[in-house]
Length: 198
Figure (cartoon, rainbow, N blue to C red):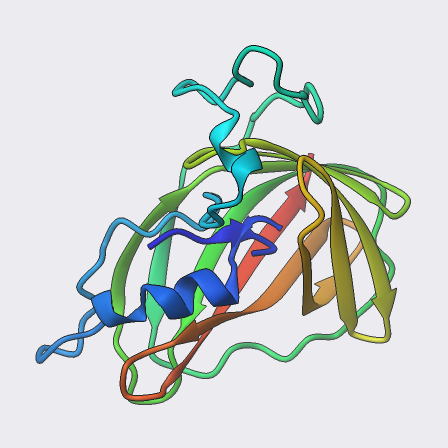
């Protein structure tokens, strides 16, 4: 299973997670798929095939940005509790790296490792440039609109995917809270990514 940041890049994409939810869970209660990547793109649109194996655009493909991925590789975990509540706030411009990623599975849900991810974002006003590890496209550009504690993002490159979620912002962090699909028994998953300003 792969997630698309913000499920934004990633990052974290509810439809993709739902389509692969049959691979999650099991008799032990632990997720069966330990290869989740919170920064990979699970979409199958034509634009996602335009990148080469090294994440660089294939010949003739548009490069959305030249942002370097300076983030550390972050371990992603399933945690059997409710996700934190969004607080909203003012999102500060700057370059951020993902420093934590957790998939909350609800009280009594599965827990354990869920893979790893690496995401760097650059925020300038309502525009966010993204570079991720994992499946293509690795470089994305998106526009973020906020209202209270919620946001809607619309990709402007390489596709026009839209997604909604909630967030918490401080002067030095940006936390994204996204629906991440359901388990076969109907239990919901919520992805929380924490980005720290560099």
